[in-house]
Image 1 (tube, rainbow, N blue to C red):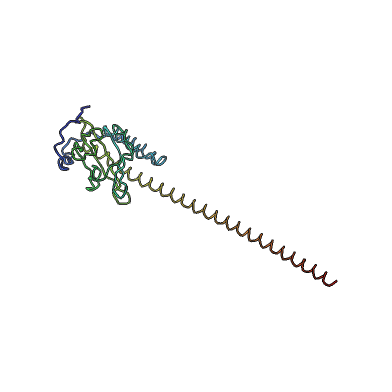
Image 2: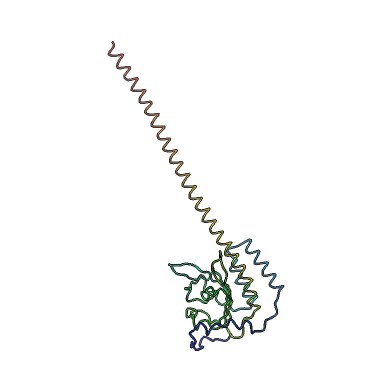
Length: 249
């Protein structure tokens, strides 16, 4: 692998790193529909059986199908009042940086979501300085996806040397995977919402049960007090009756 870390950082503008138009000019490699079909079937199975692992599985498939150096899924989140991207899944050279976060305006994913279109960038670290902390990126192809009709994140593939560049076939594959990412993210959000709702109902139910038990305890205490008062009242009546008999003698 060619180490290009020392390339002069002399092009600080976004326009200089944006090479999306080259997707139209490059020769398109032949698709491998059989491998893609097997991968998508396994991805669908993962979504059905283990939705929490879907994004990681997706990243591993993208790494293989696109013959990339690294792949990942960046998820848009609100953190401390600021839009931030979290790497929800990683494969390849970037796998050693799980759960990393990056401000939206410091990430190529932010530009991708702003434009709402696939983006191809060359040496994005020249403009996005935050990327200089990580393995060198020669090219990055990013595809946006939505959640509830709002921007939610990106699926991306990167190369770490000039020997590997991306074309329309890679774009097509990553677009297909982004559909799964959107569906999987919606599913996972739904699962979390259901768990929160179920948890809330459980807490509410437990609170209600506790309240009822306390009320029953209070009612029981009141009934016991009433019984004691009734007994005491009877004893008082008996005592008065006894005193009256003594006076009458």
